Image 1: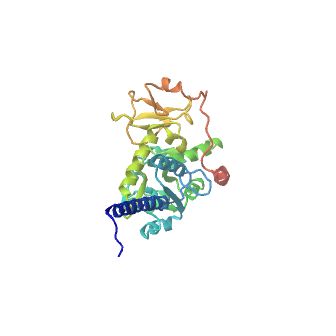
Image 2: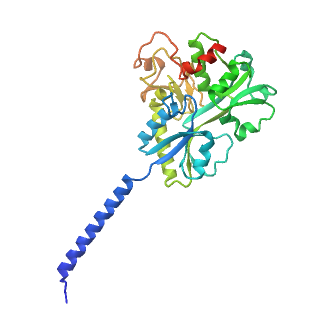
Image 3: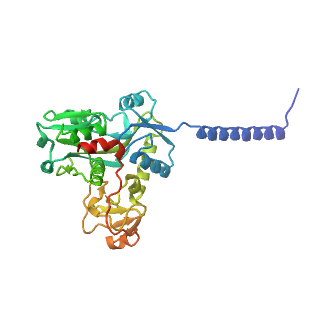
Length: 341
C-alpha cells in the first residue's frame, strides 16, 4: 500500500495547481489570439466606400478610428441586395456605414453618427436655390439613388416623380442628359461633382436653400454580438478624439470641419496641417454636429487651440490662392458625362 506524507501531498497539490493555472492562462491567451474579428459590411458608395482602389473616405476614416480604439474589425464591401440578409443570418456582425432613414433599428446597437449626411436638392438651374422643403419639388421629376429611395422616409413622399438609379454615376447622368431637372444627393458628393465640372470649365451645380434631410453614417452592430455595447463605446470615444485633433480632415479631403469641441454651444473650426493651408476658406467648412459658428468660435489645428484664424494660420502651410484640387470622382469614368453637360 502506497502512503503519501503530508509534505509530498502538499507539494504534489501545489505543482498541480500551478500547472492548472499555467494551462488556464495559456488557454485564455490562445483564445484571445485566435478570437474571430468583428466583421462589418457595407455596399459600395462612390467616393465613400470602395474595395477596388477608388477613393473611399469611409474606409480610410474607419481604419484610423479602429486603430485608435484598439478594435479588431474587418470590413467587407458587397452588393446592397446581400447586405441586410448577411447581417440577419450572422454572416456579418453588422454594418459599418449604416444610414437610418426610418428603418427598424430594434435589432441593432448603434454608434453615434460619425459622419453626418446632408441631403440636398441640386440642379443645373438656379431656381433650386428657392427649394427649402420636399413639397417644393411636388410634381417634378427628381433623380435619386436607390439607397435613399428604397427607405421608409422617401417611400412616403408620393407627390414627387422619383427617377430611381442604382449608382451615383447613373443619378448624375440624369442631370447631364436633362432627363431630370433635380437630383437628391449628399452635399459632399455634389461638391465632388462641382470640382470635376469646374476643373473642366463647366457650369457647376446649384444647391437647395438648405438640406432637405439630415442623417449620417453609423456603426450598426447586431445585438447578438458579444460586447456590442463595449465596442460601440470604444468606437465613439475614438471618433471624438480624431474629430477633435483634425485627423478626420485628411480622410474626408476637407480643409476645415466644424464641431463644438469645448461644449459651449458654439461650433469651433478644426483643421489639420496635413491638408489645411492659409488660403482655405472657412465658408467651405463641413459641420459635424450642426452647431452654428460665431465670432466666439475658436480654432484647432492638430489638436492645439488658437484664439483666432490669424493665430491658427501661423502653423499652416502658406498658400497664396485657393486652387481647386482634383475631384475624388474619376475623371476618366465621368468624361462622357462631362461631354454631355
